[in-house]
Image (cartoon, rainbow, N blue to C red; front, side):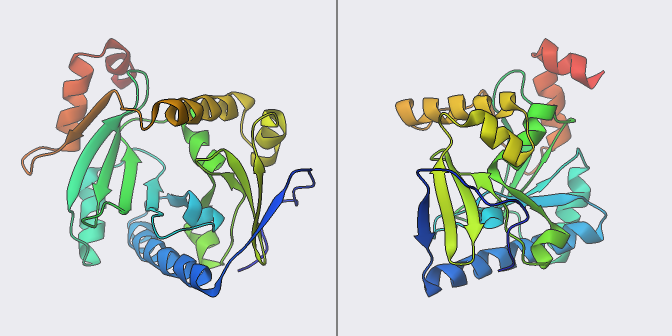
Length: 238
């Protein structure tokens, strides 16, 4: 793997994690899946990123391959791109985290729902877009050049890629430092810290709206239905 695209973390309480050969091979495998998906999307002019552990490098067997298209697009174009590469859509889902969050479309491509392509149904807010940078994201070109990137995992550990694996340290109490390192606002860091700490205390929390589409339904139809009962969302669609 090439060296990380950021300055090293020079802080106390840093733990080094050394990867085994199997873990490096697992990372290559999951990145291979991401490359195939992103190639298909890029051919259609769809700007996309891979985010989370696949971008940082700290994958495990349960890690998802999450590819995200960064702007609203036609679901037909996305599905056509995936089908052209031999992918079958296992499940289509609309998720809205809270009444004020942007609804997103999720296309699951395997029965275990570990491989997914998603995109927003409306333009993302700044904080919503920075969510992906907070966790770590790579463009298709960056992935092809074998880069890894710093980001924060679900344990609220800041992960810094290294030649031997990664270094990690807690985000708690270092919110300002983490925001500067990741190039995001402090509000974004605090929002994610609060959300992940709530999840840790209460277990997996639900979302405001989640709907698995029937074959006859479209993402656009579900978005209009949501807007009919959500004034905030309806205003954004005007």
